[in-house]
Image 1 (cartoon, rainbow, N blue to C red):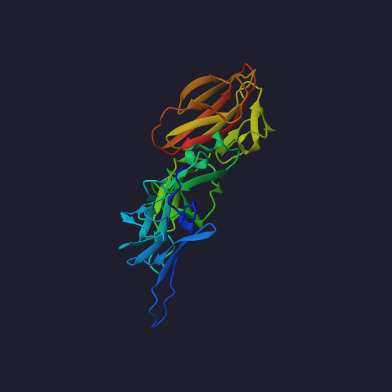
Image 2 (cartoon, helix red, strand yellow; image 1 turned 120 degrees about the vertical axis):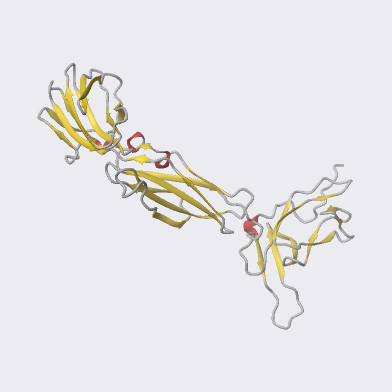
Length: 340
């Protein structure tokens, strides 16, 4: 016959979110303040608040926390400090019991929080918080942010704070102050709409039930400028605007006319052209501050690809001229300017 387990009442573990402390004493009463922990269908752990004994039923003669249970299968254990305690019962002729977790908290404290001194883990997932160009993963200035937290054996994640700030040359300083997007939320995702040509940084903070906090910050995310933004890009005759669902802003400009041009001016350290190669694509001549190079836009058609990234530029105003150099159609979708 297989040996029996020392735990008499149940094999369920007392989870932190099922434990609580309650005050039953009244003025002039001789009854002690008591704490209880409910497990599944039966109560297996009873006792007083921290600093006083706690009674837990097991099989007779089982060793629990260095003490033996009496003939009634009970043992009295005193806790000098609040915290989360994990107990197991052992007896030579029996199987060791499942783990029993007991929370001991001061009266009035949130359950199972007094012993939690560690901060939860938190991370921004691979969405808007992973940085780069917004066009790498999205088709508009509205991007999705998502995150996750884990408090391990602590009191559990209670809420999140989510913030954003503008960085780079467009900001009033190297980095503007953090702006709140969400406060004390239980959500694990949200949407954020950035301004065209701006760069952003995102931060999420996880707060557990004991008030411990930890923050994670994502990489900078740059919002490209759409081809329809006339304040930055001006096109000559010979370009045609086409609606494309997979494009940045749902539109592209295409030219089949040799010599068709576009001009833009910007302040920043680097320029990226975003568009699509075409199976019969032609050539595009790119001139930045007087230096020219020609790129061939022939290849597998895929929207929102980075066609060209300039070398690092100096400070000040930069002038760019794009010219269709023949050999087939050329297509542009957006430009991205890195502030620094």
